[in-house]
Amino acid sequence: MAAVDEISGVLLEEAKRFLEKAQSEMSVDGKAAYLHAALNLGFCSLEAHVNAIADDFLTRKDLSLTDRSILTEKDIQLSHGEFVIEKAKLKIYRLDDRIQFLYRRFSGKSIDRSSSWWSDLQSAQLLRNKLAHPKDAPVIDERSVSRGLQAIIDVVAVLYKGIYKRKFPAGSRGLQSSLSF
Image 1 (cartoon, rainbow, N blue to C red):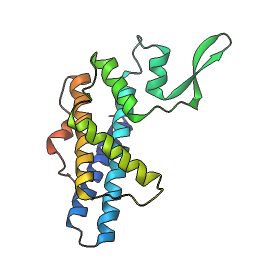
Image 2 (cartoon, rainbow, N blue to C red; image 1 turned 90 degrees about the horizontal axis):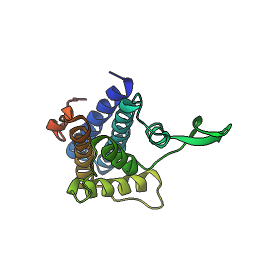
Image 3 (cartoon, rainbow, N blue to C red; image 1 turned 180 degrees about the vertical axis):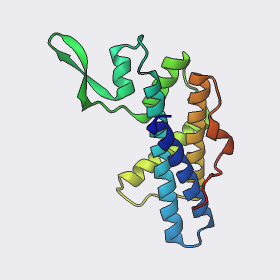
Image 4 (cartoon, rainbow, N blue to C red; image 1 turned 120 degrees about the horizontal axis):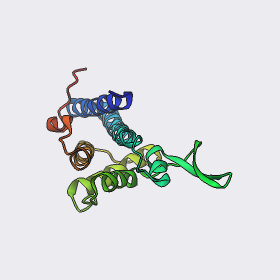
């Protein structure tokens, strides 16, 4: 098991555990801190899952240069008359674009953006961005973080089902964490 596979699962379990701790926290400040941690770790987990899936396909011979650029998040450069992946230069793609790319490229179908989990993911992403790049104090509550974490679980489950043709192992636990700290 690759390190990114392991950390993606750990981060998801930590996010769910922080949500559980927020739900039982009496202090307003403590609740907010746990919710912030849950939301941020949830997205760290999603990024790690997406990176792990991308890594799984890098050995394929049928990948175009653009495919490799998106999978590795490296830029394409013209060097000595040919296009190559510039290993030292990052080319960051939006998370939802990478999710859609992975699903379409390796399942052959478009992801269902009309699903409720997709809109919940978009809402959670906006909330996470407001937290990461504050211009004012974002309102983060248990319901929005719960919906966001469930959307993260759902999108990974959709990727697993569409790409690997199997269930996402941690998906059956929903928002229940396996951790007890």
